[in-house]
Image (cartoon, helix red, strand yellow):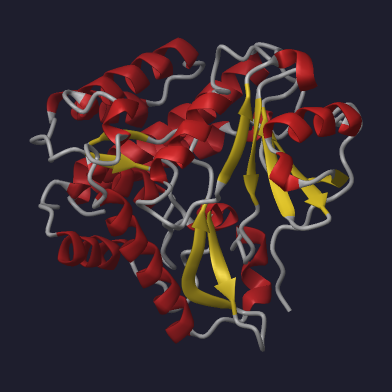
Length: 357
């Protein structure tokens, strides 16, 4: 039987002071009850995620690494605000319970939300799934349809519009990621330079703005489990990791998802990062077609968004590789990223040459 990502004992140096936490929760979230046990979820490199168990339920606590520079990309308050704005308008999010910005409590800002039960499909699970092609297709269709639902939220009546600046979003993103690549560049990769130049010269017409998840893929979605077999069902219980959510061109969100979406004929290296290549799963073209049908949006320029998604992923890897090459990290995994960066650049350039995603 499949199971959700299992929490484990808390890693050394990342323990929570349960007594201090309970004192805070007793005053600010008394309905939770006392925390009796704390475990830690193994995934994630940016923020820390803990399972809090009380007598009446299970909750999740999210925090940046204690002692980290919280002025950077660890905005717990913003993530909590996203969940709060979504409540009542989109029910596939965990219920936010409390946000604490006082670093004196646990050493960093944190927030608590209810735990969403279900299954998260990870790439390493692919050989164990034994899902039929029909079930895989149903899961993919549910994933696409849910993205359409997210993009269909009214950004004004929900208040989500306050999360971003829709005008000029695509150009700001392209210019920003090209700048990041140049700052982190260590090796000359012709395809990356060519793709960056193409993107800056081929902006598509702006789409009507929508609310974007910005990291939408299988492993950020909690699926319902069949009560008899334990297998994943095409029913989404919750969507996680809203830390990068904003407002802008919805096809940027779709393009980011497509950049993670591998097909059977793609380079086998991409299969390590997803399970979209399993038999029955929609192809990228089928994803776009279903999205267009369900949303009514013009997807004629989807190649731009897909190529940008690949370019952005390559830049993220390049930033990590640059830190390793400069000696800021000793993790050997980071020193092996250059071939992946080259592959992503070549894939983007190849898609432009062929004119297909």
